Length: 242
Length: 292
Image 1: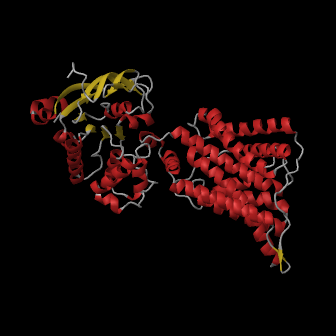
Image 2: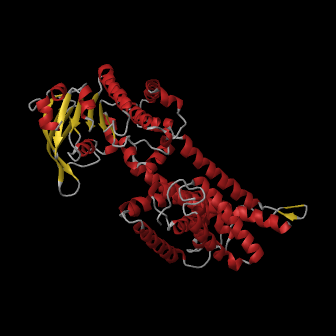
Image 3: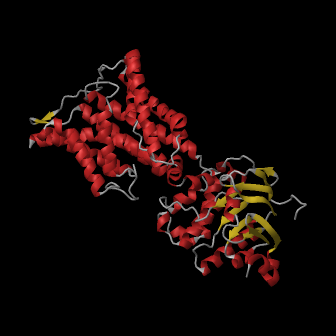
């Protein structure tokens, strides 16, 4: 893992936090293109801080973030989507005051290729049939599962290369979580989407991930093939406590 | 009955101006969570620009357009140079800074133009047309209605139907998420200030000819009425601002007509208090009551 910088996303020695005390201590991470990486770990491990730093909402105090070999240092948040990075934040970020259709169109407004933005919108409506029936409904009228679809769909309209997802399973019924995870796997297999997934729901996340990244107290304590973490009881016990 | 009809029409005409001015307040509140107490002074400054341009060119309409342009520019400058740098942690900070801007703008206007009243001509006759002995609206009133109607309609269309309107709404409701979706939130904020300030300038251009004339303090009382209108409608609601403006216009017209014009400032304050006590979020509120 340490030698090759050949991932779509490469993070080296990343230090970031709020105020003086860093939350992330020298985080290293490599996510190869077309794979799913699941970042797991206890509350307060720095998982959300990692995503917020990757998408530019939080400025790192040291370290490098490379997307497809390009250094993202200092890129304003609103430019990152143009570099192919989509971040679905904690709580999903559905704008309740806007309609489903407006939320989705917002995801494609930055795109120069208007025709393809339109095609992407149609595809999302095909992918998430319930959204198509609720186009004119406001975001705050949707169920948790529908919000999940809306947030994912809105990110997909930008046709991202890298999708950052913060706790997609939070507050969702197990059935909906399973559907979401299956969809992520399908997107990886069909479109080559790269996903960095932060999850408390370790079993679900490792169930679809190629790579498991265990964080604790702001450090990456181990990076393993997801199947290994999932199936090896000793490893699981040592790093994840169950 | 004749008097009632006259007072109603007159109240609606003034109310249309309050509606426009309240709408400007609502636009900035929604975009920046700031009650722009400097809006009256900013609008007067734009009206003085119109005065200078009209004096130089002899054209009312060039002055009118200059006021709208000056409003756009002044709004953008106030956002970029002043408000952007104010710490919004306490809602009181931007209020204090806005009050400071009022003093600054009024002092500069006083220095440049003096503090006497300057004549502000109306582009159309202000004498009411009479139908069957009943005094109705003047051509100027019709101009006011048409202008405010066009502006309200245009703003509603921009916000509801255009990409930039969608960006502006998204940036106002959820700045962080909007940035993640590629929206230039800072730019949308500046655009909001510019648009609002231009609408404020328009309201000043419409109302000043109906008062004593142009003066650095010409919009002070209008501001109080429009602020009341915005609170009545709910600071978050553009339709509320329009309805609130018309309600305040009618109230002032009836009070002034039936009880004497001395009582109108009191009536505005009573209405403001009543709304804040009974329904602090405003009649059209959809969110929790504000703190300012």
